[in-house]
Length: 242
Ligand code: ADP
Image 1 (cartoon, rainbow, N blue to C red):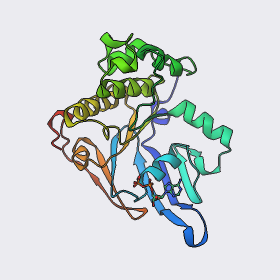
Image 2: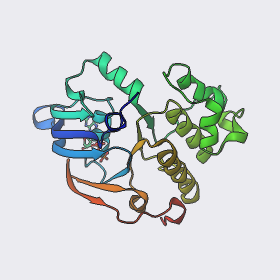
Image 3: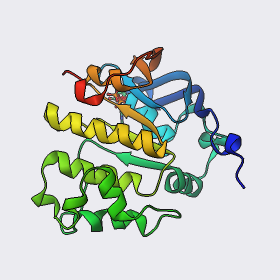
Image 4: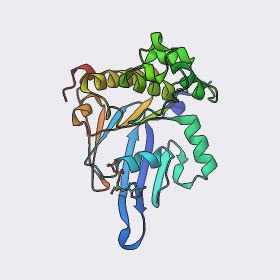
């Protein structure tokens, strides 16, 4: 039996002095300047801040896609910043899903087949049809990406990311290529994933209004966290104005 207290710790990520420098010498870009942060598990967390302030860099490092220059990043009790490449790959495979601005679907595969690409190699996957139902696409499982709207394609991408039941879902500008009503539908899907699967959702966005659906908002500026605010009340994605 799993001890619930140990299988769902309160803190998903912790960073200490997390630093990322791209390039060297006069060309060096200080993308992260010693970030100290705690990210609770099970929440929807929105990262806001100007373009170039370091949001994606943070996401990429704690998502195991990029490496820090200095400092520490922990996922639960695992020290990501000390991991070998193979360990990071395993960490990603077992724990995280990614949703990007562009959907990266395979055009020659149906919605279900795109999701199956992930479920076939995951340890404890959902049924692909169930994942597609979760994002409201039960009726579209045999459609190819070209037969789906932008919002529907993004929902397939979300179904693909959640089908392996990840503990954490990273979303980098998931509504960036969508009009506002389609964007709201996609945000509603993300809220549904958080409500039903309990996945921690970390979302980078330029759309400041999106912050109102989050449990917590991390404001970035110039490579560091400026402040973290907790929303006392959260707005339903359908009521977000942008
Ligand atoms: P944000 O997500 O807030 O827009 P980023 O994390 O993408 O910010 O970028 C932070 C800074 O790091 C920016 O100045 C950006 O130009 C720089 N940067 C990001 N990725 C790279 C890279 N691969 N090589 C060089 N500089 C990069």
